[in-house]
Image (cartoon, rainbow, N blue to C red; front, side):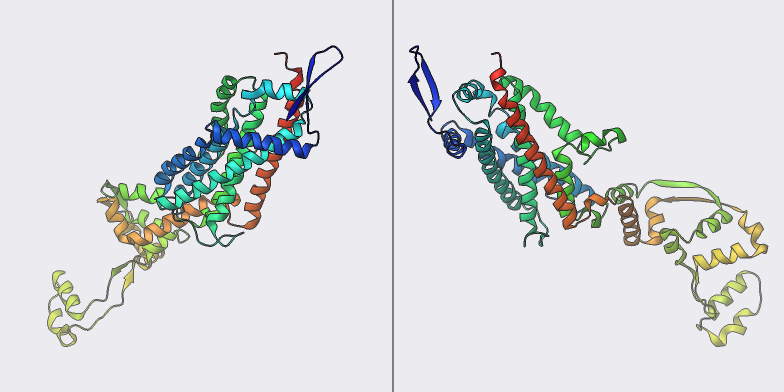
Length: 413
């Protein structure tokens, strides 16, 4: 790559034999691949497989199954991509800083050096992404079938994972160009990962002032893209229902008046109340039922009078809503409505009145509507905008790396 000549004073001077940027890129690529084979850099691939396997086993039961599971699963996958990308390159430049400085002074183009890193790191990230997707599928993660950009959603998700990993990789490469030693680079590394995790907006509700910081993270756009691909907004929200099921044996007791119950049942906009109003509280009475009721109240002779019609129904069914409407509209029922009624029941018995399936559907639909996120809508526009942003950040980090290394000669070491 370099050759040595003698100048007029008899001192040795090194300079590049190949001056074109393209030839220097191929030279550095060869160097990086030799380091991959002979300096154990290939170990990042089995490490990526192990990390993917551990994460996949944890998220497999919940990913693509519910809102909460999808959000936690996408955050975990994004963390895998960021972790792989950062550790690929965090020491790539700082460990050979003296070599880069010396070769830059002898004619190396910084842009060629950075371009070679971009190509090499892209190949590394691609291999890690393929491994991650394969391990996830092997563990049993059920990916949606149809993709929005390709015939398979697993391939769409793989593109997102690659872009997250590659953007993180080049971000770490920039940090490596700033650090003067591997110790300094590894010291910065935890802060870089924590910043990406905390300000991703995936699991923590961020204050308004942090919005500009969140928009600078790779993790935010990775979570947005993966959540949109997983169709987050059309999945059930199960945490509230699970909490309700956990309280099914909890005792509920107190006192209420019939008037309070009537007022509650007048809220017809509430879907749960609408279901309660449909419950039948008085079904059709037969002539025999009516005769027994009359005799219990002291009315004599009702039995023989009603005997000829026996089991014939004499009344129609009455629902809870109809009874409530009658009491609310009848001024003569005021005294009855003020009468206190003690009650003691359980959460499960209350749900039995409506039905468990109906209650679950109402709770999940209502809470799901409240958890709707526009950025997570499954559309090509949302996903493509995240991909473009990740590519843009990758180019920015590459440009910053190039600019930083252009000043490497000013390093006083």
